[in-house]
Length: 71
Image (cartoon, rainbow, N blue to C red):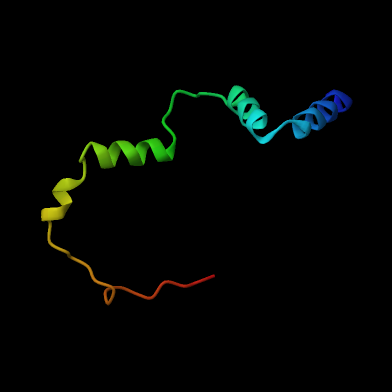
């Protein structure tokens, strides 16, 4: 691994404006073909996929079950 080169690149990126750094981040991001969590949430909300749950009875309340342990 070329540590000197990597350190030089990091220094150069840090010297860029925030806008330029954002462009570098965008260029370096890898699109793996899978939607990210915010995209999944958006699709679920916009697609009305879970609207059927609005008509379902509430089966559980805060009084049900055991208290959750806070670590």
